[in-house]
Length: 246
DNA sequence: GCGACAG
DNA sequence: ATCTTGTCGC
Image (tube, rainbow, N blue to C red; front, side):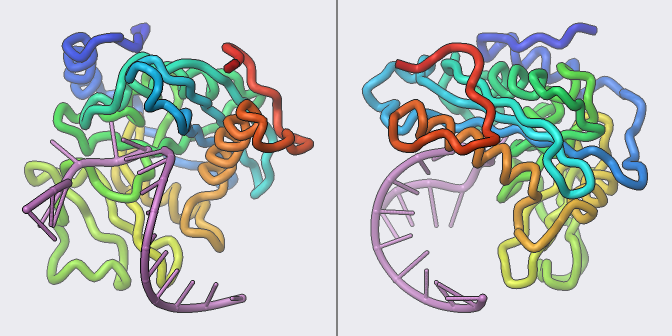
């Protein structure tokens, strides 16, 4: 099935219901998986532009053995504003283009979005994985609709806590760095909560946010700064492809 | 009082 | 996301 990026809410909602019902083969990380990530940022002066047609930059990176082995940056325009549950409308197409531009395909992709934790059980991380035929894991600061389902209090310092929707665990709240706020590892395309948690814990380093995600975020934000003539492009950062903001 | 539903 | 204010640690 070719997974599209609908341009209106009704079509996206219908697609999300279909995606939620699919059962792609489960993915489980091997010894040294290539972990990638994608990130999108938006124009800071978007207020002057119509919501739904603002400049945006997307970046993606692939890591292997702790090192970046591929990077891609793309510039474009959003098709919609943000609405809970409809993030794919706003960031899906750009994110997909950036990840598709990676010279080295990752084994699993981290996305700053939700997966199964969604009103229709198909957040952007899950949608993106289906669209690119790539296992995905969502990584966010907080859940969308899932609630803590663990025993006792909500002390994440004692270990990952399951987050559930209607009794079904869809993600884990996990502290990747002592003293820092926990983040949420979401089950998404071809990944269940346990796999999402394992991938996040396996790639966790000194920083709270996984390195591939931090790199993708840096690349996207730098591209935006370069476009605004606010900074020179660092050596090693690919020039954005696609629409050139002026 | 405001926000409490990803980004 | 982005912005802003405040606090903590290197």
